[in-house]
Length: 268
Image (cartoon, rainbow, N blue to C red; front, side, top):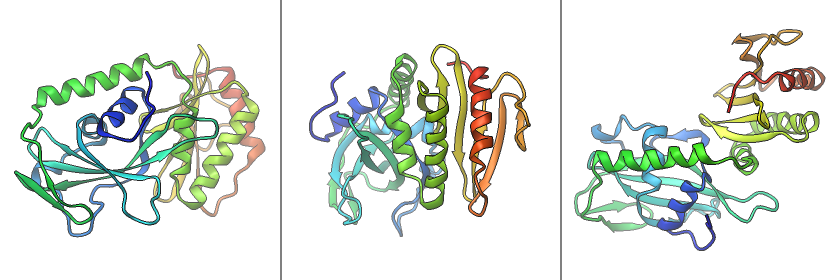
């Protein structure tokens, strides 16, 4: 599918269907000061609602903030009757012709005929509001596109890492570099809102996730690694938790990566 051209509501939808959209590793559920979610919108979930919203944007604007030159804002109608504002950035890795959309924030807007946005003024709302059935169909189309996508997701992983703040980006970057060195033909993808690393036709062997005070490096193996990583729930989820003050033992991490890659513990 071709996804070139200006960033419009249609292009955003095409990027979603090309599996070129990820959630940021952090998330602001009330991005704009003074704007609160209505009761209808408090239950919004990223996986269930953000992606279908991107596929139904009725207006896209370039972010007006000086420090967001690659940023965009989109407005969508939700099946519950509310209107959503979604903030997202574009990311293009080296040699990448197509962008990755990184959704960074979601907030609610009240109004029936129009809404007032502090950045873009009065915005007329479309008369048509999607039904829950239509919303679910969007979600199903996206999930089908993800299942059928067998391309390497390196650009999405790089976009994820680039969106991390400070020391967390440093840890994630080094983890990614060590994996690349130890497993040159590694496959990457963003699944379940976190980066995964795998061996073609064998399965995933590593991932990482980011929390408020630590980064979790996980090793997905069919057997226990030697020595056992300090945390995790079993062979398929052995992990190392790193805080800002911790030092990364690169030789040990490289050994765990080699062991896990020899016996991946999670299928495609």
